[in-house]
Length: 125
Image (tube, rainbow, N blue to C red; front, top):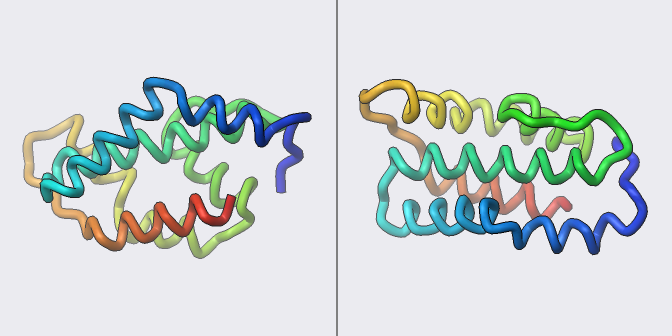
């Protein structure tokens, strides 16, 4: 588990209101509502990366700045939950999010399961 900086909860609320974080959140919600799996995979990957980066900024430890490491940091260091990272890997959030950026092939992702996992992750905070 990580040690958080003084006043982390207040800082977290401020960081979550950052325009880039809100943009990724709204893009994820809109893509889900419209059933746009391609956009959803990319937006959710970015949103999870945002959360990992934010939590690393609030920790006394190493600062994180990219996707795989930030998701791992969230699940292992912040939440101490191995099954959550296994679920995220099984859904393929990072892999499929990357595929949307680096290929034109169709991406299929279980959006309901991904949203449920995201909700479980955020509730654990």
